[in-house]
Length: 224
Image (cartoon, rainbow, N blue to C red; front, side, top):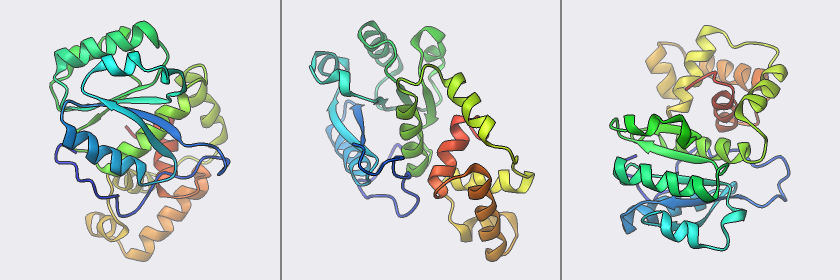
């Protein structure tokens, strides 16, 4: 993710919201590099479920905007140094204590593990674009639900058929953006077998597509 491209991901966009007429989730990007902000904007705006509401190099513009109440999630990239990220999150929490925050991490973020910061999700900066988009959708869906634990319990109660060990392996590879052919090669199984596993995963998780399945799995701690 550190060398993020402005191209829209090839496959696996996050699923549409429950009602296709609902407006997209609104994302604010915090990143000090204009080129990086623009690349992320084009990726996020390239599919239907998320829209970039604004971007800034730090928290000042975000906090100053009168449009903050309508935001659903904030993305703070790994380009923001840890000390500045800490201050940025503190400032956001002073005015918007419940606003979901997703942090792209580069392995030096130990200082951001403070529970008081209430970071909704942290993903590695090298993760796939599909995983980033699914994480943003999941974090946005948590906004106003009450708590991640309540949503997780609600979803778990609906997942009555657990995934097999092989299905879990396949799902983790899908979360990393691996194609069906790539899954087949990595697990030494046939392409048709992969398709069967994917079909079972979608059925068990009641997911509309691959990325919807990843989002459900992330919400419920099935994968991390």
